[in-house]
Image (cartoon, rainbow, N blue to C red):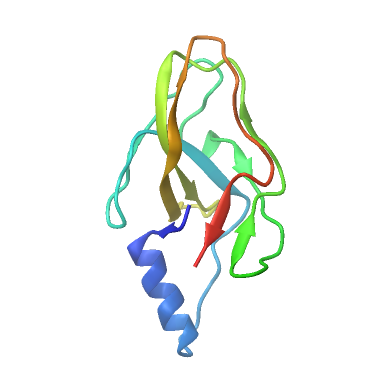
Length: 130
């Protein structure tokens, strides 16, 4: 996933030229999207159902240190007792009191779950690159 939210991207560009920057609060939440957004608009998040809690209750994800221009998750993202749905992408959001979308992107292949299934993105399989 190498799609930065445009607002967040602009802040990083400004920071690279000396403008003060406050990093987003962690841990980041990994929100599951039934429809993908774009660099300027959010996708459609799976509604709270079964074992998934939308918004700030979405599963969290952490990352290992960047190397070679990319960063990989160092923990699995798992949701048990999924509702029957199709997940098309994910968005990463900050833990700030007003959460900020930082990254977004489609899954390599959409994942359809049946009621009660477990959805997992394996540790190391969620990568960010610039």
